[in-house]
Amino acid sequence: RLGAASPAPAIRAPLGRLTLAASPVVVAAGLGIFFLLPHYGTGYFREGGKSLRRDLTGFSDRIELGSIGRIKKSHATVMRITRKGGGGLPPLPLRLRGVALDSFNGRAWEMSDEDHVILHRGPDGAYVLDRAGLDSLAGDPRGSGGTPRALEARRGLLSLEILIEPIESQVLFTPPDPLMVSTTRFHSVLSDRGGDLYAAGPRMRRFPYRIVSRLDPPPPRPGEILPLSDDDRKRYLQLPAVDSRVEAIGRRITAGIHGDRARARALEGYLKSHYAYSLDVNDAAVRDPLVHLLVERAPGHCEYFSTALAVLLRLQEIPSRVVTGFNGGEYSELTDQTIIRQSDAHSWVEAWLPDEGWTVLDATPPESALGDLGMLARVRRFFDEVEIAWDTYIVGLDLQDQGNAYEEVRDWFDVTAAGTFIRLREAAARIREVIGFGGVTLPASDALLGVIVFLAAAAIAVTGGVLLVRRRFGRGRALHPATILFGRFERAAAREGGPRDPWEIGR
Image 1 (cartoon, one colour):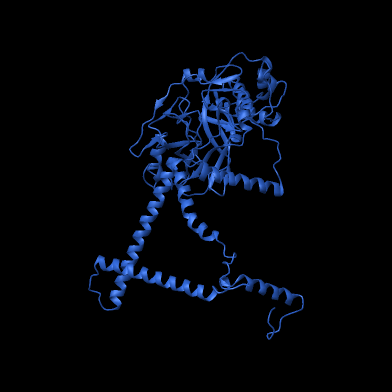
Image 2 (cartoon, rainbow, N blue to C red):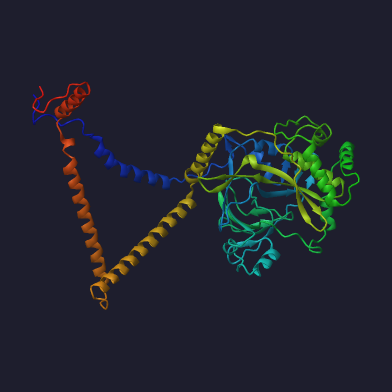
């Protein structure tokens, strides 16, 4: 027979107290491990457990035909870009310039002059790239100052913070017409004759840098563009032995067209509209890749078309150089960033045109690939967003990110505590005015005592409320298991049409 000495009911979840007691310990230990073992970024070299560093020659002083095609087949993240100073997102597709190459040997592009110049660092920690452009902005009545933060709010300027994954190259990628760059990770920034930027120091970790550029640079006025020197002109017209059939194609395209600009645009448009794009290029056994593309009309990808355009321009006595970088990007709603992937790697041409200077030309045909449609596209987009958020906030959290997070929490606590103290002081002043003690100064100890009394009263009120709730609703939880079982039986019998009358007792 069940009685008062029966075992405690098993329905009381004995793991509840253990869970509540262990949860703070587990969370504290997890946070400790999380901050003691920072998550360094995996970078975009480890794809499927295989290093891709040997394929990333497109962002150094040499690029072989076909190397960027291997990079573009990867979907790994390269950069995360955040726009500073408001003004919405950076325009897409976003073109980020890396390295300009000028020497061609028939199969690879190289940099003929590797001399670098150390840029002057201003007192605000920024490196000026275009002094004339900044001087013209200094007289703009819409703003003042020439620091990166002062330039963030100006119209017509693009201020970006770029978080770049660890790469073997030291190149700093920049949008068109950069004015200023700043970074806290390296002691200096270098520049070469081609206008490329490099960070001085090893690049084995991800790091952020900030770049300010023009959104729509004003067109140059006659006389502003200085002509190329004889040495530079010779440098940008250098060519190896070129097949006569390639020369004939260039002459046919530009027949009857006068002026460097018109001829350059004609060559660009012809390559873009008369040839096919493909990432599946295998020309290892091909003797002349340029003949394979232009004469035999084999498909190619970006560095093949940029090479073809640069060679055809040089055959027309138009100085040109091949540029590698990125062109594309996608917006992540979870992180509010523009994501640049390896698949956005690109190559294009800069041609020297009279009264215009170095001008961007892109002869790569559009990719003829259909994207996913309907639900499949949304599901893929969702997983991409989750992957980006995970990599940004978990995997990519390093010591500097942790320090920044700590500083943000500390600043928030300081501001909140100061605001709370000010509100309490104002409330105490109003109370003194109401009760007629406007001229009495309340000591700090009295204010602290009042806060303590208020907190104690609040704790007593909360405790009393909890006790009342437990007293009101706690009986059901304290019922004997036999009583609970009998109640279930009564409800089941009532559903089957046999309810118990009030004067009946259970047997």
